[in-house]
Amino acid sequence: MAFGEFKIKLEMVVGIYAQDMKLELHSPDGKFCSELVGDDRTLEEMGVIDNSIIHVNDVSQKLSSLIPQDSNTSNVEHYVIPDEKYSARKGNLFILFYII
Image (cartoon, rainbow, N blue to C red):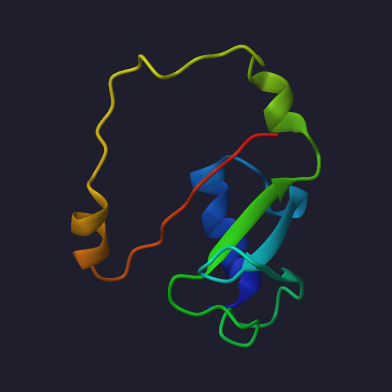
């Protein structure tokens, strides 16, 4: 899959327009590897491997301005799939999203 297509798919997940994303590749243990650039390259060409971490940053800051800084979601009912079950599934993309 081309990197540009990947960013468009991420729009629906993270709520950030592709043109407002800055993506960074981190190793599975969290070490910074590189900034991901070049919409025509594939994820494999960029060095993305199983269990890689991709940080998505909102360069426009539009999304972070919509969320109150004091919002606490710890008491919101939600389902959390156990890591063991998630790891057993095939073809998944794990997304950890932070708003800074």
